[in-house]
Amino acid sequence: MESTVIPLTERTRTPGREPKPPWLKVRFPAGDRFHKIKTLLREHELHTVCEEARCPNIGECFSSGTATFMILGDVCTRACGFCNVTTGRPQQGLDWLEPLRVAEAVRILDLDYVVITSVNRDDEEDGGAGIFAACINTIRRERPDCRVEVLIPDFMGNWDALETVVRAQPFVLNHNIETVPRLYGRVRPKARYERSLELLRRAKEADGALRTKSGLMVGLGETQDEVFEVMADLRASGVDLLTIGQYLRPTQQHLPVERYWAPEEFAPFVERGQELGFANVEAGPLVRSSYRAHKQAGIASAVRGAS
Image 1 (tube, rainbow, N blue to C red):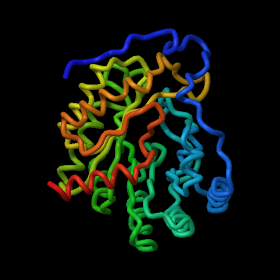
Image 2 (cartoon, one colour):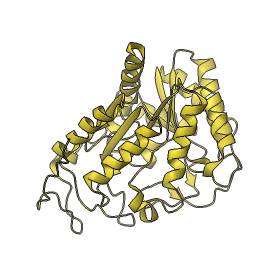
Image 3 (cartoon, rainbow, N blue to C red):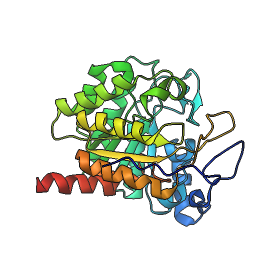
């Protein structure tokens, strides 16, 4: 398939503090379910990436009774240019009671599908892998029918830590590649593109039945062809599921948006994903790595069952 690049227009350029285009405007979160979940999270001393990363889909997800739990605290040891999570050196060690609180919240919310992610904890030898595994096992014990997806960091290339998570048998193992290799030095200065690919490849090699997933953002200065190349690399590493969404600048201290990709510009990513053999590619301006994750995982299961 030939690359189709829609020319930039004044509508898609983002000089200075230009307002977001209309397709990125979402309804302000409200409703009883939304406030109930926020209250429950505070009562159990839990964090969600939905809040920490200022996800534009928080209203839809909370109102439908779903959330992505963020474990290992709320201070990240890295300083990625796109992320709104607090950066610094965590003052507390790992909280081994956290998996119990997460499982209790899952039980109270009566969830059938849950996503567990985390800050980076490079200060810990295993990067928090043991807590990830404990969350999976505890949720499975407390609510056996609940499927658990994990969105893990790269553990600084500690493959024993990765094995700890894989052995716990999450329903989906996700690790975001985030951007194209050319932009890593600016976007993910402490990460390595090849290391992330190796993590995904090793996870699949360790358990061939494991559904693997990754995600990346557009709007940071990449080209369509560069995104296609990343997609090919991910598929070669055995990745089954992929998400592609628009980068939104959390604050003026974060990386600027180089451009807003129009909704129709995401269609070629879905088409290329089908050609490459992904089980599913979710691509659109408001798509995030855990947005409608249960739907994507269900598609992957159906594809596997039919193969």
